[in-house]
Image (cartoon, rainbow, N blue to C red; front, side):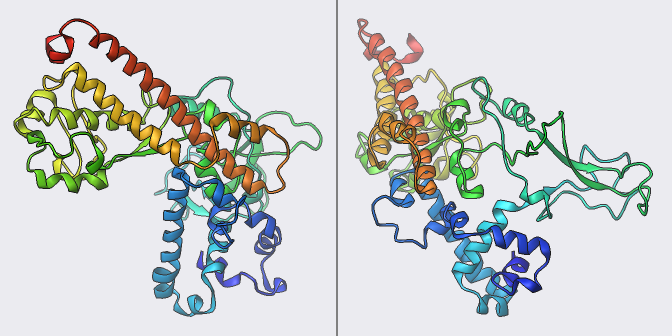
Length: 427
């Protein structure tokens, strides 16, 4: 990063051909596609990309990431390269950061699966995988056709990833090459099929949510929201606003611990949380917390809640460190929960979904879809921001439908004589 920053905006005649080409293509139009650089505009004006993202999880993530880039410049670069930091502005650093982050590739090194036979010990001069700007290779465009069906699991994503035209990796030199050592490794880009004259060789940078793709590469894809499980939303719960917040909850221990829960009551949720094979458990965790909230009012202590219902939490109530991958857990059924409690817990989660929906800019999901289908956008960054917002509304719509279906099921059970007064374990 520092190397490219040092040469940014310098006399082009003194640049390497690689950097000169990168800088020539780094136009104002190219820069305008990156959220990091939207911060430099008057974002409060209606119709800007930033205003399209008001209320979204993406805007929160971009703000946080932009603060990280600023800290890199102000705290890290000023220590490592004080003279360079003194000659450059934060805007210069942001522009170089976005340029490098969008073009950097992973150099496979000598130990990749595509490598020639041999070990790193046998070939001590061969480097392992590392990030790099590589001439020609870092200019290859991304392209991947949409899948025929929903990609739910990491395995399905990986298999579809190989649908790219181009292949990229390390290979030995062509037999008979002049001037090459026998063990030398060459970086290759090749096509897996016969190409038509003039057809472009492309690569796949990766398969990410549009929120991530826009930040990293400056573009979005129209099929990510409904053909993958990568889009997300963030649901938050405020302890003071939860039903019965003034009630004692022995199952959570000392009442003074409740305010300390707040940092741990934000849940990243994806649309396929409940599909078998999904690595995302955000929806399960927010439901587990809501159920624990009601169970804690009946349990005599955290130990009793843990022993009877397998309770586990985060922060001051957790059995391990905050941020544990296991997150919130509560067995189903739980003896401390009635059917009415189960229904109330679902309504807590539904209220969080509704609150996030209400905070998003624009209208309903269908209105955003109509805007995206309505024709060309003069500002592609506005379109990309709208895509990201649409994706989150899509996730929220599907979460809401699933929760309403669950609520309907519990309401049906509550209609049976005596059910609301009985514990789940007695049913």
